[in-house]
Length: 156
Ligand code: ADP
Ligand code: MG
Image 1 (cartoon, helix red, strand yellow):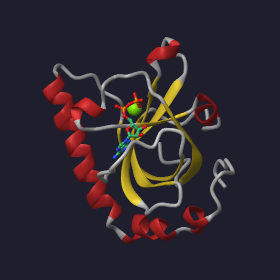
Image 2 (cartoon, rainbow, N blue to C red; image 1 turned 120 degrees about the vertical axis):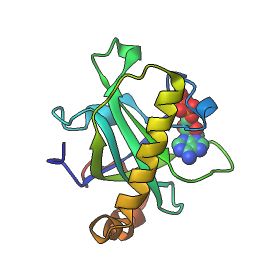
Image 3 (cartoon, rainbow, N blue to C red; image 1 turned 60 degrees about the vertical axis):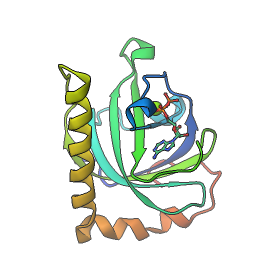
């Protein structure tokens, strides 16, 4: 899972498939199919963490899931970023820049919604702790986040 890290990626935020993440208090910004296709095909599904920035905005901690996309009968992947920050407004159509710096765990099925939510909350806490370590913190300042937006680059 770590082989491709750190992984830099930039692309447009699109409508997801309405799993109601926002209702759970954990909105996930979905990348377009084109961006997902540009990921290494052998990248492991599961939960990752790293840094994210919307447009020219500030860089925030994030957790990210790479999973199987139910919309495509689970033959394609989806990549969804939950930014650990409260935004005033939605940002569909904007350019999201991320660097994935670490891996937390594989995808899992949960017996209840409560179990799912508490697992995600643990993932968020783990991400916050890991991202304060120097090797991860240094990527927050990477030049990647200060390049002009608009251009879609994958792994620089
Ligand atoms: P969808 O199924 O369309 O992805 P979600 O319920 O997952 O819907 O909500 C995702 C949207 O919420 C994002 O595309 C973004 O516009 C907005 N949003 C607001 N705050 C955040 C955040 N902290 N992290 C990610 N997305 C957020
Ligand atoms: Mg989503």
